[in-house]
Amino acid sequence: MYYSATSIRLSTLLLLALGSPPALCGTAHEAGTATTSLRDYEARIAAIETRQGAYGTELSESLLGLGMALQAEERHAEAVALFKRGVHLARINDGLYSKQQIPLLQAEIASHIAIDNYEQADKRQRYLYRVQTSGMDSGMEGESLTEAFMQHASWQYEAYRLGIGEQDYTRLMNMWDTYRLALNDIIAREGETSGELLPPLYGMLQAQYLIADYNLQQESQQSMDDLEGRQALYQFNAYRVDSYRKGQTILAAIHNVALEQEPGPERTRAAAKALVMLGDWHLWHGDRDAARRAYGDALSELAALEDAQTEMEALFGSPVPVPDIESLRPLPPAAEPGPGAVLIEFTVDERGRTRDIERRDENDELDGPAHRLMRKMRRTTFRPRFEAGEPVATTNIVRAYELQ
Image 1 (spheres, rainbow, N blue to C red):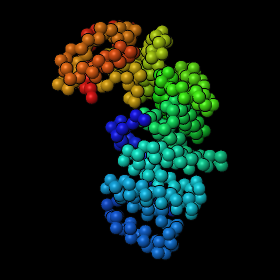
Image 2: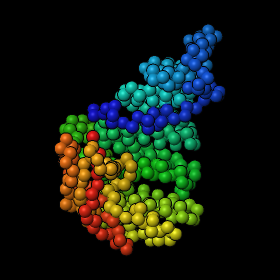
Image 3: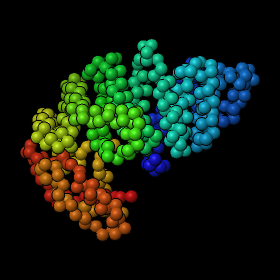
């Protein structure tokens, strides 16, 4: 395991896991409101137990409310116990895959994450996903199912980052497969041109970058010592072999969605951005000719805008490390020069390759991180700067980076 409390975007995961819990038992849910105190919830629970017993059908909602009130006070271990009891009661009263469990499970996952109990968060996420998708065979559909797919795919990525449980590459396959389920669900409801397709498409693109970049040499021999491990590796290899084509297909779909929107500047910008992303995908895979064609098409799209020069400058005015996707950017963001930063000077040639990388600061205490950053920069591909529609070299680039 290689996760730690500092390696996770906790606020993102809390939002992912918790969301906005739906109401239980058909009534408005008041958990966490200023007007409902811990004592109020405890009194409600005691009253329900007096009327209905320890398995009362109305208990789950008040247990959720009390648990979320405890969450607000960061008493997460106590909250977890209440959420688990609520889930147990919902299963008894409404069935094994009762949807009444969903807000309780979401809240429980959030508390596990808050106290760094990622293994339990992962187990409960697996169960939550089973509950959310249990009605698929009976025709369950709608936004709630799409949200379940999206949430589970996002969790697979976070679990991959944290190194939780199973082999890393199986997380990436699960991530891809679940985003694809979300995509298919939206297509079935809204057609192939809906703007709602973009979130799963971007998730699928992220998965393909990670699949293509995965180093299978890091896997231990143990992965090959059993039939299940060998089958998983063979399956992942099949994913990797087809990754380049799948990425192109995803980006073509993103471009098509942009073109199907109402005509206007925003459609043009979106179409150009999709073409730039396609160029980045080609360039990252070493196909510079295809990348140049895609970048040229993007420039042609932008030329029709009134602020064409501004838009072109934003995308092509300086070298950009690829992939240019927030969660996948290969280098830290540039910072202001200062005592806590390293200063690097380098060149990016017209093919997007870095050259002449030199350090220009004197922060000796950052020697180790700085050397690692410079090694990373040598392996990083950049979208080159363009002038008059042509890629050109950019020399004497000086950027500061704050390194931990």
